[in-house]
Figure 1 (tube, rainbow, N blue to C red):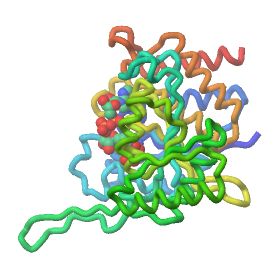
Figure 2 (figure 1 turned 90 degrees about the vertical axis):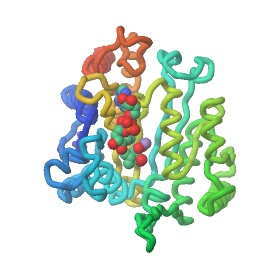
Figure 3 (figure 1 turned 180 degrees about the vertical axis):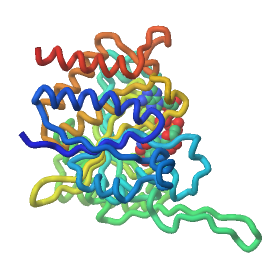
Length: 370
Ligand code: NAD
Ligand code: IPM
Ligand code: MN
């Protein structure tokens, strides 16, 4: 049996709490003989800054480059509000994405049957929801240069961020979205703002070209990103795959989170290009949520986004499709059994903590092999 090299970067706030639950599951797969993992750990974010003054060390970057997959918890928090900008916790995550070339961020939003009443939207709008946001992750305004604050002659300041996209960057993310749609309900909605932004004009043009050349069998629609945000809360089930840029994807995926009940439910996979020779690709798996400073340290965080991210690792990086299905089924069953962390519970009174939720998923896994 192949041993998979897994690097764990728990990070800050609830990151280590939710990672702890995934570690139990990783160990379970190992002891069951279903899969074999060689686990390494390192620091990222504020934890790394506190240790050595940077949001991620070169040694941790080397480990990430050498791993078959990276599992990432969350970074950031008020403790690091005043650290130098280049060393802020989020810079660690951005460096990982950029240096590993993780241009494709797959963010599925599924409303589990048991949670149709946990959403802030009406049950009938979200019941059965299964959409995916494909977010471009290494370009756009996150990385465009110049990115600076300049002091002008009169002493006032000017801040600049640059939204920048090349044909190649749009082309490759469009292909990820079309390929994914073919395995699903065969529809892609491309969200940009070509009415205001040149990058939106190019985005629409390139997506249209890729569609015409290689994916004419997939239904394609173009939607302005602001309208897309509105449509997501109006009638979310009209979507299958939404492809969009880095910043719009960040915002639209937080909107989509509430369709499922909580930000604590959304997993994601950040993928690099496939090596044409081996088919391998760099990959980092990260919940969509952050370090949740408001609940950190209290054992209240929902671990399902993190557990779902590991299920995506099993599927995308290790080809362990049955194990991924098994884990996703275990999550479905744990929710069906009625257990809820506070973010998805009807009232705080009947809520369980992070560890109880993780244990419930483990129990369902055990039941599946019995
Ligand atoms: P957040 O995602 O941390 O929290 C937003 C809200 O959702 C909070 O009320 C929080 O309690 C809740 N929440 C989030 N995850 C949850 C979970 N698993 N279970 C239950 N409730 C959950 O966003 P924020 O408050 O805007 O940001 C806090 C910090 O996290 C900032 O420093 C931000 O930069 C950082 N952040 C990091 C990542 C990441 O590491 N991938 C993502 C987003 C934000
Ligand atoms: C996310 C987060 C990150 C982003 C931050 C922490 C850099 O919000 O993954 O959604 O903006 O991409
Ligand atoms: Mn975000």
